[in-house]
Image 1: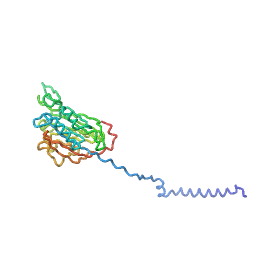
Image 2: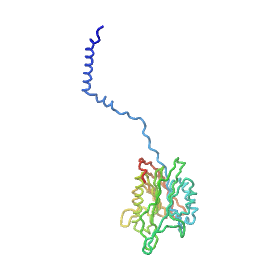
Image 3: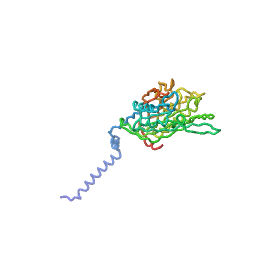
Image 4: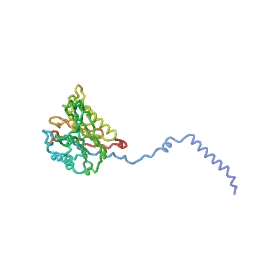
Length: 333
């Protein structure tokens, strides 16, 4: 047998040949197709998740005229009024009620009529007057020595048919610009009641603006509309789509005196009026009650329903509420 060391030259020669080949390959580089194949990421074959379906929502606004006006039966029939509101909520599958000219003493009857799962938010109105050269305020009551007068927002917290429930995040009173009182005549300070909900995330505001008699040139009502629109923008920035409604005491085409700008233009800039294009009357022969929806809320149509209890008609709108894709904003008030 030959010594093993005699085969070493052959091995070294073979190693040298392989090294030369490897060097030549490295100098020319990998072919482009081969290099891209080596670094191509693995594509996922999982389907893209579909966006969650929109949440159905129904909102009703009504000036119930419960403060004892001669032309309103509701002022003397609070039990019947509470029953009518509850029936309207059930028949229309309402989730939110915006109620103006409310009396606090009918709230217990209204709670019973609505049934379990509803929460009422009531805020009393106030008036101002000049007495002996000093501006003074006082709360408004329903009739002489009556109970508190103001606005209410009712929200349905449990909706078993839709398989969802909700909780109230916050409720507050928005003070609106109001006409300055002249002399000793009491002038109502106008306001809105707002509520924010979780699941679905939503902000709703019910408002009662000044009358044309209190604001002849429309400048105050234009400022009130702008304040409401600002409240809607604030909610949207925090991840809450907004619906604003109520008795706005203004027809759609009414402009500020000396201007072409409509009084309610800030709210039309905000989004959609549920009855835009039809303009059905809500008070006598004119339209002064509205439901405006901002981004994230799609109106599907609305109805206008008369009632012998009030001088205003009910306005009820159906919506699709789209979930907000930025939940991190929701922690800010």
